[in-house]
Length: 164
Image 1 (cartoon, rainbow, N blue to C red):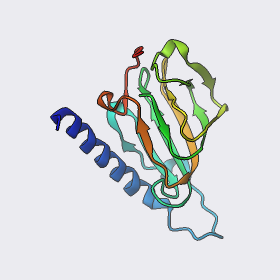
Image 2: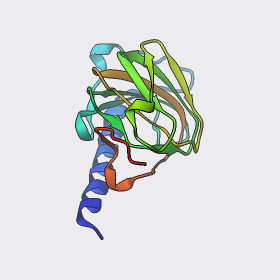
Image 3: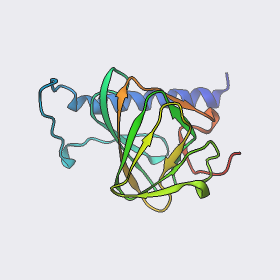
Image 4: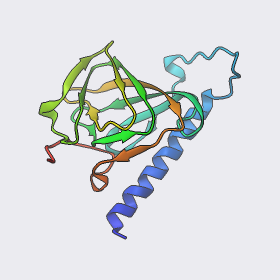
């Protein structure tokens, strides 16, 4: 096995474990309980390439609804990938750029300012992130959800460049 690929795989496992531990803070509510999370209560976890992440509600690896937030630093995007379940993405702060193919070419993305929403259908390849400044997004979906990378050797996040 390629050592670089093994290290990236281990990094992904550690990242997901951190996300689930961070998210566990807000998962004790019952089906009929209100859940309130104020900005000063959010505990951000570190993902590769400076991306920050937190699970505000639920668990993306278990059945049921989940709410996740990510902050992408300027110039960092997810590599082309797809998800096993539909997801709804809302831009909280900044401008989020979304590409709807596997090229990872930032020139082909659409800029979505704060307040925008985008539906990601299950199984459809896309890439997204920040170009000019940090961007915060919120993702709502149903678990369990898995992510399939188009270019696993590129890692989960990075500086986009045309790969096609």
